[in-house]
Image 1: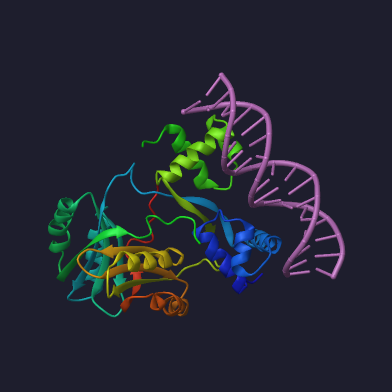
Image 2: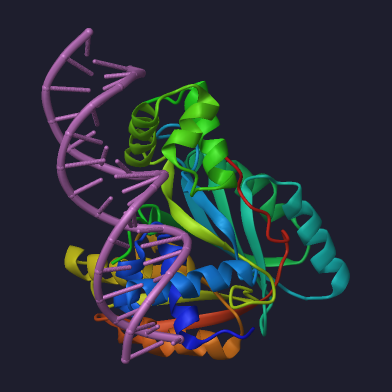
Length: 153
Length: 153
DNA sequence: ATTGAAATCGCGACCAA
DNA sequence: TTGGTCGCGATTTCAAT
């Protein structure tokens, strides 16, 4: 059971808002409501749609947090350097993401802190003390543009 | 606006299956269907529920493989530029994160695509067609050092 | 703030083409 | 395959407690 380009379009729309009606989805992909309904049923039974869930908000009620996007440049990318770096990063719960970038000596991190002061601590205590780190470039995220992702259009 | 133990129970049930009827959920938590519906509306407006999405199966269209870290530079940061950009980005489910950076004209995105080719599509069809975009800088993530850890509630 | 009734809406299962 | 219609259940609104 293979997937059509229309099926892909349906899945994209459902990812943004799984509560859209079959009529709305069908209108977007050029199908009638009943045809769209059948495709979705097929996708469910074929296992391409495992289920439906809510996307929860972050933190407790209105708790403000600061996101830092951090670019860490290493002088080398040997395995022991990477291993030590990643171990230290995994031990720091404020680091929510950490990607090793291809073609450079960089890690890109997202660090979620309570405020700028607590980020300063993470920066000075953890990041800057790692071996082989040439440069650390931190950028403050003013806002999360997806924090308000709601009913798609 | 603080959440109740009943609200927590509702959120737990919705996480497992967001398509349960309000009557079923209400029965589980000891509320009527309409009261349960009211609670859910409150949770949505308070930001505890960001939205509803599908859980995609493996091996199908939903399996994302590559992460792209993208730096988008705008020529201006007026509100209408930002608004248009963010609206377009919210309509693209492959964009998993989008942060507006303080002190520059940049957005930083994380885009999750099936492969390099499908990222190329997103890049050319969506990102590069936005008004006011001066530069797009994409970096391929070789690996996620945290191993796709997800934020629970 | 919760309830229950009423009206509307969308789903799911039939048809015909 | 698709589009159309219909019955039923669910959602949503609203008055009442």
